[in-house]
Length: 344
Image 1: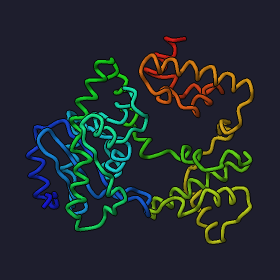
Image 2: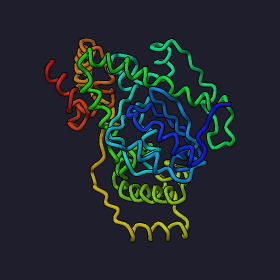
Image 3: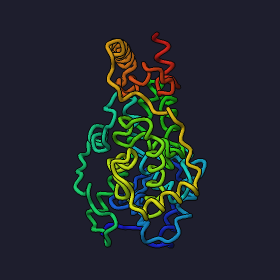
Image 4: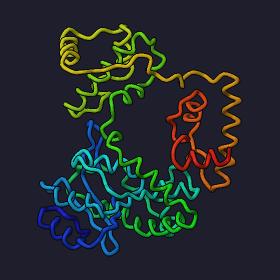
């Protein structure tokens, strides 16, 4: 039978056993189908000498675990870390001090931008892992042994991958680039998203007449607040399509909903900056197309020279933003700007 840490005593004994371990392979399993917040269900941790699953649904006090994870010297080794960091952040309010993301590291040595953990284990470890339980309901208890083993496999090879990818990055003088990329994940705004960023992601928002944007912004803030309070997906509260229809008065709120909405607006400081919407949804004109093609060719040449996927330097969408004057894109910062300006 596969072992599973399921109570406070077992957790403390486990943490005592890894007291001297600072490099931790970490993965999580959570459910986020019918909730706003991810419901953390399982935490898998690998060290140089052990691989364990922690059933967080069965353990009332996770503070001892957080104390270990958020120590200054602890290094998280994670594949595609953002959602794992978020699941922990929403429970702990803390972010890791040190992070090595194997997916980002792989891209920096010219593997596909969103390369899977399974692809890396096959290429570097010669192990073919199946995604047999990718859609498993992780709130289900008891967990079958084969499901626990499947979860353990998600961290079992992280430390070997870390060592091999770290070596490749060192050889290519790209470790500083990785640190820059992972530091971007250690920003609380990624996990407690400002309403202006949520507003900009509403499907169709920039096709809406600008005179309706203020009301749309207020509706967006109200929807987000309601979704958080009820812990339900935001689109269960109000779809993007309906939000836009309310904003331009194609639909009207019921009298009770309007009363609640007005009270929310009166009780909260919902600041909307007019004319702050980007124009990147507009088709490129001929001059812009020529500029983009020229820049894309230059990016491709840089990518070839430095053994990188071109999209890692800048995506097509961000390139459009850049030629339209947005100097806040990633190309204008850090190692990307250094390469771009060096090759200018």
